[in-house]
Amino acid sequence: MEITWAIWGHARDKADIERLYRFWDEDRFEEAEAGARVLEARAGRLRRGSRGLALGRFARFMATSAACVLGRGAQALKEMESLAAELDGTTGPERLLLLAVRGNRMRVLNAERRYGEAEAEGTVLLRELTRLKPVTQVLSIELFVLANLIDALCGQARHEEAETIARGNLPRSERRSLAALHCGLVDSLNGQGRHTEALTEARRFTPPRVREQSGRLDMGTAAALHALGHWSEAEAAARRALADCERFLDPEHPRTGQARTLLAEIEEAAH
Image (cartoon, rainbow, N blue to C red; front, side):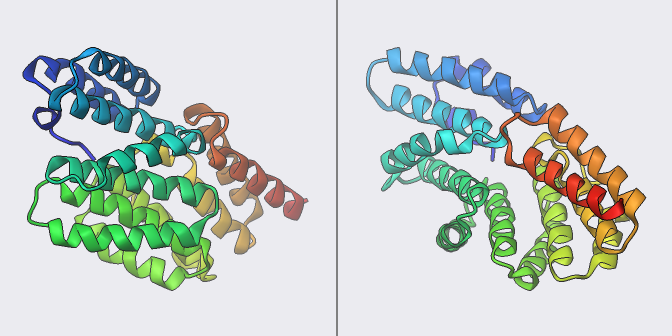
């Protein structure tokens, strides 16, 4: 969900903003979060005006986005909602920033199993994004919202709807959105009991490795193998998933606990 640096800051801020994007692109989210907080502090020292205000909002967006990816979205939720309130009623580039902030809020709601609220937020966002489609940079936000909507639907056992969204948008996705939608498709198939198809999709191709999806595809693979009675393969996939979660995600990330639970269930069934 990159927002062009020139929109948010004076040219002298370019190097710092580009550094944040580089950290983000390289999955160095801790550094992105820390750098965003430094940028926020600097923006606060500027005279109140369009430059300082916009730069500070952008920095807060980057910091809370990194917190979400690292699994600390619940702690950042109040700040996200405060930022969304500040941005409400804005137009142009700041309107896009508002939609991205609300997309992050969807991610947190899903993590807290508040799936109905996440779905409602996603429905409103997609309606507004449809109106903004001629504007550049809308696609990445739209795909991010759709990936979160798939998770919300799966959380409500509406797996057929989730599958339709995933299949319909995979062809226009890349890197982060591609990885998220691919994992969502596997989850939706497992949720329908179509475990052989889920396993086929999981193995059909290897999506780009992105840190925020660590362990997720292996969890989907393990769930499918477990349901099909392939205990040893399921256990191996679950162990890979847990290892990736522990290596690449924050210790508090919900997926780490989910991977441990899945591994325990498989081990109990196998033995």
